[in-house]
Amino acid sequence: MKNLYFLYIFNFLKNVQFFGAVAVPFFLYRAQLDYVRMFTLEAVFSVSMMLMEIPTGIVADRWGRRTSLMLGSVTLGAGFFCIALTQSFALLALAEVVAAAGLTLITGADRALLYECVRDAGKEEQSEKIFARYDAAGTTALLITFPLGTLFVGSGLVPYTTALAMVFAVTGIGIATAALAVLPVSERARERYSESFLRDGIDGFLFIFRHAKLRGFSINYAVISSLTFFMFWMYQSLLIENNVMVSWYGFIASGFNAAAMLLLALTGPIKKRFGVRWTLFLTSFIPGLLYIGAGVFPGILTAFVAIFGVTSLRLFRSPFLNALMNRQIADTSRATVLSGISMLERVLTAMLYPVVGILTDRSLNLTLVFLGVLTVSGSFFLRIRDHD
Image (tube, rainbow, N blue to C red):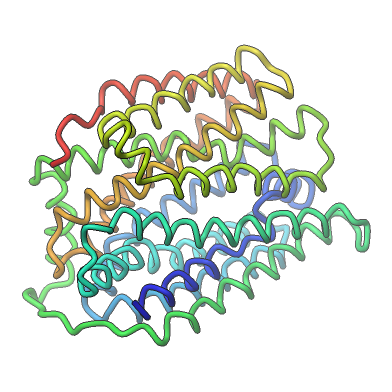
C-alpha cells in the first residue's frame, strides 16, 4: 500500500501545470505564432514522442519503471523550463523534443508500475478503482495549479507576456520534483528474456496487433483519446472567442477537471449501472455530439457545455481502458506494450495537428464540427463489444 500512496503523490507532482490554462495565449501572444505554427510545434512534440515511445518503454522494462520515472520527471521539467526562455521557433521546437523525451519515459512506465503494485498488494479486483484514484491525484494538481497560473498571468504584477513565460518556468521546476516522490517506491526485479533492445521494442509493439482483444482496446483508446484531446487546446480558443477574461481560464479548467474527478469517484456505481461496454461507448459518442453542437451553435453556453463534457468524459474513460489493456499484457513487456499503445495515439494526433491548425486559422467552428464528426464515427466503428 505504501507504494500506491507514493505513486499518487508522484502523479500529483508530474501534473503540476501552472501554464496549462494559458498555453494558447502563450503561443499566440508571447511567441507570436498563428495556429498552423503553434500546432506544428505540437506535431514536433507528438512525432518526437512517437519515435521515442518504444525506446523509452524499453528503458523501463530493462532498468526499471522507477528509474524511467525519475529520469522522465527531470527531463520533462527541463523541457518546460526551456520553453519559458525563448521566443525562437527553432528553439521552441528543440524544447518540445526535450519535453517529449521526458514524457515518453513516464508514459507506460507509470501505469505499468502502478498495475504491478496493485497486483503485488493482492488488489487486482480493485484495479479500476485504484487507476481512477491515480488519475484523480493528477487531476487534483490541475485543480490547484490552473487557477494559480491564470490568476498570476491576469494579475498585472508583471507584464502579460512575461507572466506567460514565468508560469512555464515554475511548472518545469515543479514537475522535476516528482522524481523525489518516486524514490521510496519499491520495485520487484524482473526477468529479461531478450538480449536485443530493438527486438524487445518491435515484439512489444507488434503484440498489440497480434492480440485480438488488446488490438480492439488499443485502437479505441488511441483514436478517441487523440480526437477528444484537442479540446484541451480548443477550450482556450473558445474562451478567447467569447471574450472571457484570462484570469478565469484556470478556474474553468479546474471546473472541468473537478467534473472528471466526480465521475472518477463514481466509477464503481457507473460501471455497475451501465456496464463497461456502454460506458465506453457513451464516453466517446457524447463528446462527438458536444463538439458538433459547439461548432453549429456558437456561443458561451454551448462552449461551456462542450468544454466540460468533452474533457471530463475523456478523463473518465481512460482508467477503464487502462485496466482492460493491462490485464492482457505480461509483466516482462508491460511498459513496452503500453508505450506502443501511446505511440498509436501520438501518430494519430500528429496527423491531425496540421489539419486542425489550418482549419482553426480559417474557422474555429468548422474545426469543432470536423472533430465531432470523426469522434461520433469512431464511437460506432471502434465500439468495444467483448471486454471479458
